[in-house]
Image (tube, rainbow, N blue to C red; front, side, top):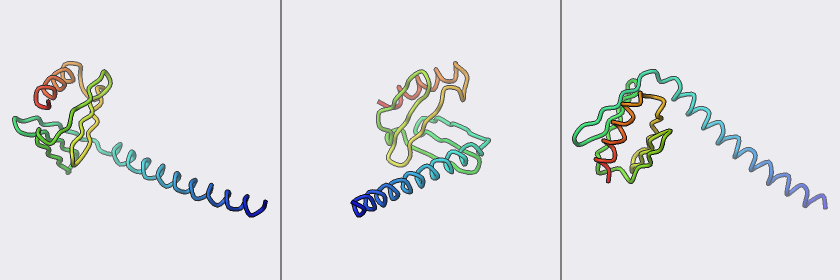
Length: 107
């Protein structure tokens, strides 16, 4: 009976440490994103560009998979990166313009 308890305890502890490690990675990522003060979105005829401080992410319109647009955010998926653009980060007019451009460019 003690051996079964010890085995289950070891399995439990391994899973707890795995979850704790994942939570720490997510927290570190979100803390890093929170520190970024300057975001810039540039939409051109051929590409989608996001500039965050000194980093620049450029994607061609053809690289995107179907997008998800709802009343809270726009979610873009590509082979390189996934982008979540919240509606609260812009005005209503900017959000409407963004969604219309994205639906036109990504089919």
